[in-house]
Length: 184
Image (cartoon, rainbow, N blue to C red; front, side):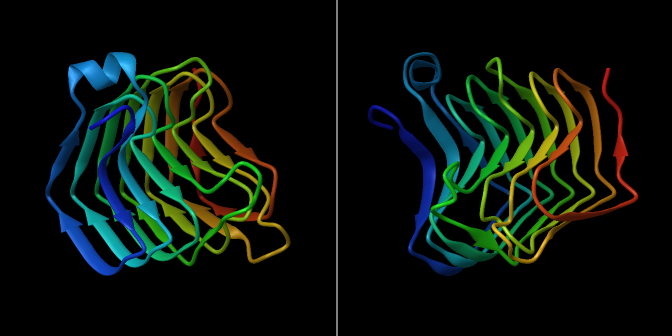
């Protein structure tokens, strides 16, 4: 790692599966520079399964640019110094992630004062967020911003506890079926 960046980067790629790996930052980069654990940018048909992203300066997993058919499942994200657990999209809506699955993930031990467990920015559309567990986060458990008038995102079977903010924040279209939200 050199002055930020990522532990692992998948960029302009397609049809890649990453299974059973741990992505961990160094102490120097954790303390002094921001970096992401895994960053996926402008890619399609990518699967991250049974991995761990830990000890990162920024987001544990960050989906940047335009992505389609991404699967993040059975993965643990923990110990971010100053970043959201799983961060999807661009705050200004200039990029999108669609038709993707985020399932059976464990997100906890998130650092920073205003970082969320799992966050979908403007333009993320038609994603399934299912059976994820989020706890010990300083701000909101799940955040879903506007889909920019595209298909809704789907939430089902997720749980949040010990969130410093709100369990679930939705400012765009989303369909939620039995989702248990607990905030202490």
